[in-house]
Image (cartoon, rainbow, N blue to C red):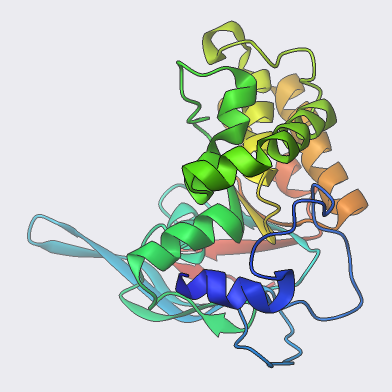
Amino acid sequence: MSEIHSDLSATSGGDLALTAPITPRRSTAPHNRLAPHGAATVLPSVLGCRNLLKSYQKGSLEIPVLQGIDLDVRQGEFLAIVGQSGSGKSTLLHLLGTLDRPDAGEVYFNGRRIDNLSASVHDELRNRGFGMIFQAYHLLPELTTLANVLAPALVAESTLGYWRRRREYRQRARDLLDLVGLGHRLKHKPRELSGGEMQRAAIARALLMQPRVLLADEPTGNLDRSTGESIMRTLVELNRRDGLTIVMVTHDPWIAQQADRTVQLVEGRIAAP
């Protein structure tokens, strides 16, 4: 059993409970899936970082992107990260979601440092701890909408494990597609969907494994205003109704206003409120 599976077993009986609600519910008790066995730490944030530094190399030049970021995201919060192009907002989201590693500093999830864990543990974290949606929908063109939403379960489970739970996973996927208004599009492939429908399918896929945090990088960037507003209504509903923690990067002030709190990045630093 992998490192994260061992930690998950402390709270889920050895695997993720498939009979739980399709999205996280608000709770008055601390829930720390990644805490060591027996730990009862009460933490101010579900996701955060300390003194995060990141630079990229361009030829012989080193270009600083993040220059000492401290951030805490509270359970159930909807946080928007805004800033001009090149301010480092997408880089910050990628570091929080373990898609990249910082040059220095630390990233924490449920009170446990995660930036220094192995690549395989990061993979499992992104499958089970985080849900991710991007400006590009990243749907597999040869799969139906339902099959695209089921993809994270196929990655998470062995062939036998998925086969045993296939009815539960398929029902959860259908429920999520109903939730985002795509219950009538189960058998359609991405080329048969509009941009807004593809983004809704991506949201359903991101929620399949019941993540603690949804990370969204410019989720309305490829959409027209009306469709973007519809996507935002879906995200706000997931946050308000189900208590889903959301961290969203956007350049659009109107989109940012839908969040509970906004953090602005300026030249790799968090601007004073």
